[in-house]
Length: 215
Image (tube, rainbow, N blue to C red):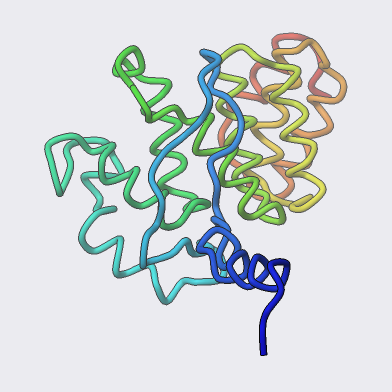
């Protein structure tokens, strides 16, 4: 039986790698410098969800995301700890602690030479990969706050709050951002909720007391 050109074309398209498996964790968005975010792919291991694929974590954490890497002291595969942080995030895009390491790196002294390690790129990829995980939004809010981008910071905090309304860390950092944006009354409400949820850092309370907004 002879196949038509249309049938042959459809068979070829169906068998092509691009149609068989699109990248489940693509790099999305732009860096703050206006550069398109890009990076490596997980290859044969991952990408996995940090929240739901816990059994896969030891494979990466034992060899790459060790305590000295997490604290940005030095790497395991090379002297550069961000190479191992990157390895971890490529395979676990929403790895909470690795994302926080990336944020700290981008905010630190090495940020001028961070190259492809922009925290905003890792965070955008994490949110796109796992939109129901509140932590990447919370960390993006923290990062944007430290970068002085308060309006964007508050947007991410509000998204995170919808998913984790009783998280003390989120409420506390949200309150700090609200205070720095001049929303003192709302900052007080979030501070009260944070402290009622077990937060014991005194800085936000002191700020509100000094501003005359602590009741």
